[in-house]
Image 1 (cartoon, one colour):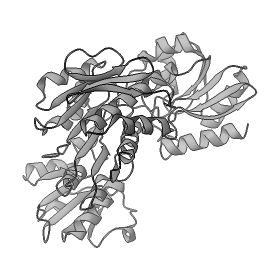
Image 2: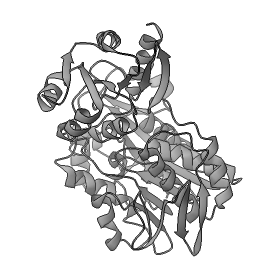
Image 3: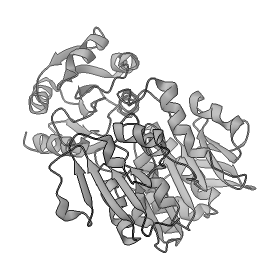
Amino acid sequence: MKLGGVRVMVVGLGASGAAAARFLHSRGANLVLTDRRADIDQSKLPPAAFRLGPEQAEWLDGIELVVTSPGVPRDALLLREAVARRIPVISEIELASRFIAAPIAAITGTNGKSTVTVLLGEILKAAGMRVFAGGNLGTPLVEAAGSAYDAIVAEISSFQLEWIERFRPHVGVHLNLTDDHFDRYHDLEDYGRAKARLFENQHETDWAILNRDDARVWKLASALRSQVVGFGLGPAAAHAGIWPGGRSLVFEIDGRRGRIGTEGLRLPGRHNLVNAMAASAAALAMRVEPRAIERALGEFNGLPHRIEFVREKDGVSFIDDSKGTNVGAVVEALEAMAGPVILIAGGLDKGGDYAPLIDPVRRKVRRVILNGAARDKIAAALGGAAEIESVSTLKEAVECAWRAARRGDTVLLSPACASFDQFRDYAERGGIYQKLVRAL
């Protein structure tokens, strides 16, 4: 892909857009950098013509290529106008993939992406590979472009897949599909179509690792050109697969059959067993030996703010699951809890349905404490499932939970919402929760 002398516009100057801009500059592109925010710190970006503030169609005059950031909606003026003018529009991951020689393992799904991405990266490192692990997880994929790696492991969001052309992972993993991002997508079908684009450029020599317990994901199996591997808690039926067998994972993949021990697996909950299967299946498709997988599974401690134990005080356990930003994640977090739960939820609504929480809340939760912008909507959806208390802030929620807690209870922060009504992101929310808990 020729970039020298090409006039390229980058739309959106968050982490992904800034990384794309730096890479394009290193390849000799003439840059026009745009963002709706007028207060961008230009000193941290490469030399360019800056167009900041409300979008204007004339900014596209003379532009030959548009690289868009995942946070920019599909109906943004500059993207619609670029399409109308037949200016190519690509995502940062598409740009990156044009300059990456190593095989890519790409992980998508509503929940569990980050855990599987990091775990797969650790497995490949245990096998002696030089590995880049990033993407939507944190380090933009374009940071790997032009570098010498044996394998690339990338968390890929639906937003990043909206503007791909030739992006082709050697191994694609689809973990699950549940209600999320309805502030961006029309419905679950629209969201699912964006996720499924992960596989559209794969060849017969590539691999699709699919959750056979999720009907919306598994239905993709019959339409793919790539080799399909199913993972899930139930026994494998069609295609190659991996499934639980006692204290191990049983697999039959790429002509190999064997077991991977799970005695050392430290991650709680059935969803993390599923995550371990997905990462193991991807590693096996990349010809990693089972012993290396087993070793990495036993050494992996999980990621912050994902069912993370914070402390125990007077017989009450406190768990931080701030990354539980949708209903499906909260359901899995509740299933991982043993004792009675006091659930702290709420934040910025993302347009999903809270009704799937009713049954697990009724079975597991003694009290729900809601805070943030969505508290009234969640309270209406959960009415009658448990005692409900509404407060304004997370600080009030923690204080109420502590007053209501009894020995043997678990106080679980799992919001089912985005954090942006009160916090910069889920990590800041989780960090503040942990400080509040430790101050009790």
